[in-house]
Amino acid sequence: MSHTLSFQHLAPEYIQRFQAYIPSNPDDELKKRFGCTHLFRLNNNENPLGPCPSAARVIRNFAPCRAAVYPSGDCWHLRRKLAERYNMEPDQFLFGNGANEVIAFVIKAFCRQGDNIITAEKTFAVYEWVAEFSGFEARMAPLKDHAFDDDAMIRCIDDRTKILFVCNPNNPTGTYWNDATLRSFLDRIDGRQIVVVDEAYCEFVEKPDFPDGMALISEYPNLVVFRTFSKMHALAGLRIGYLAGSREVVNIVRRTCVVYSVNALAQAAALAVLNDSGEHVQQTRDLVRRQKQVITEHLDSLGLTYLSGEGNFVMIRLPMSDSLAYRRLMMQGVMIRTMTGFRFPNWIRLTLAMPDAMDAFMAGLENILKFRNPGMQPL
Ligand SMILES: *Cc1c(COP(=O)(O)O)cnc(C)c1O
Image (cartoon, rainbow, N blue to C red; front, top):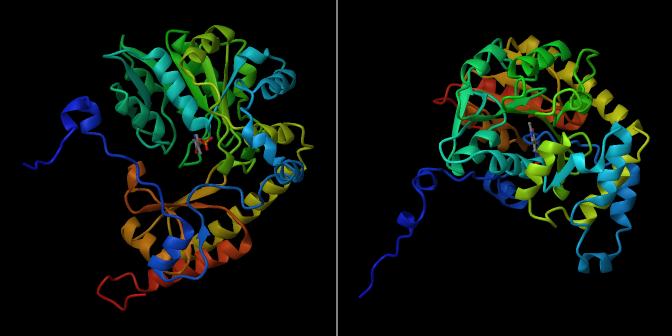
């Protein structure tokens, strides 16, 4: 007798209803499918300049025999380096396999059945996803003028709220809370919940009133700051990020993390980044600033609506569905991020990159706008 095996009933209900995230396919596969010879990936906010020269050297010279040996289980040297830089203690830092992993550390550490977390309706979705597939409620406060709304978030709080996640600057809208807004928010929370400030794009911000989360930890022991080496520092492929907080909070969160999740090559490259002069950061900022101007001038000339704030990306509203625009841009070798998943239907997010990639995007965009009536000539 044959019957189909089903294991659905073994999984909790919140897993049964959760949809797995589908990552993009590798370049060779996509080029075949869309019939393009070159592909510009402008969907993940990566740094097209690559890692700084000293980190590049460390990667090139990594001795193969080191691959056989477990890495430092707690990123010893990196934590000491950060402690020195920020005038904190090494045990105020906790590393993970990308900042994505530390999101899970914090939620696991503080939430139990029936608890909730609060974030914005239109922001980096991983906070919401991790909460939901772990069986906790994610409450989403609407944005106000495309920015995190402090009042709306506070109104969502109840006695089961454990963590509030603020993305600063916000991916994907590029808005940010200045020092005064962040401080007043922390004052109103007054230590009753954990406040996470995700600073994945802080290195791109040049505004003088942008707050340094790290400097606020000594005043606000419930504050947790996320940083990553994936964006400005161009180590996304090596997967390394960290959180910082008061000793009290980090000592709790540490119980939920698995040692050895950060590999040896990532640790060595990140250490080189922390010892770097900062010239590479300056070059990247120059590139992003210039390309932001080129792109927004072009969008103005096309009469398109866009959001361009802090970070190495812009959001653009299109007069067509974002998934159709995605397919048509892919046929021209340009990959962008569709924004329906971020609750911005008909918007796309574009990573600011090298001039050749920006030119390819602008040419592709003009093409799809010309032929935007689906009944017309396909591209
Ligand atoms: C990219 C990103 C992260 C995660 O980065 P990792 O590659 O996992 O370190 C976290 N938060 C935001 C807002 C991001 O855009």
